[in-house]
Length: 230
Image 1: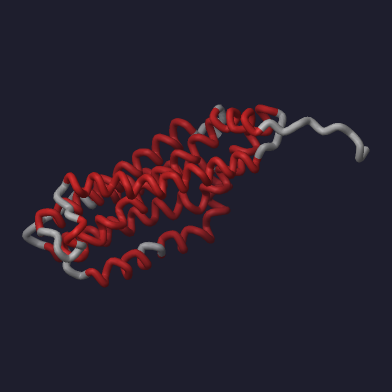
Image 2 (image 1 turned 45 degrees about the vertical axis):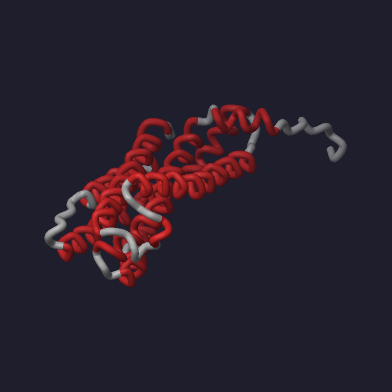
């Protein structure tokens, strides 16, 4: 009947339900890790290409090129999810991302060309792992919403999606700010711009990029493998 009394929506309770929803928390922490790595490392990558590799125009081309594994995986995602499962594939993707990030630690100052080749190969490996996770991540959130309804008896998808998006944007904003502090500790001087940084500082930026990507991958792996429980 149209005049039936509906239960009142309690946004505070819904937010509390989100914080007790392990799948939603796992998927959200994984997304935060992804953005901290990608968004946070952007400035450090610019410095490394400007001063260390000395081919600044190549950084954008490489970024576009590393999207290829994601495009290749996307058409296969549905069949692979049906065969192996969302969590299992996302965990594999995060491990692949960690492997690529660890390869970035291989830096040989006496052979910049070799370093650039290693960086490109490592970026492709990272991109494949990221492509696997990115393609599946929103479907994982859908399952987390179903889990929330099953556990609490209410479908609170608006609150779950809103909080998930909020924490993603928080990582996008806070991540670069924290990274700028790390860059300063490693010798980066903002007033000099990317071109004015010393070569040792540019070398440190290469290490910082590798560290950020590794941190990002480890956080993704922990969130998906141990917190997300569907």
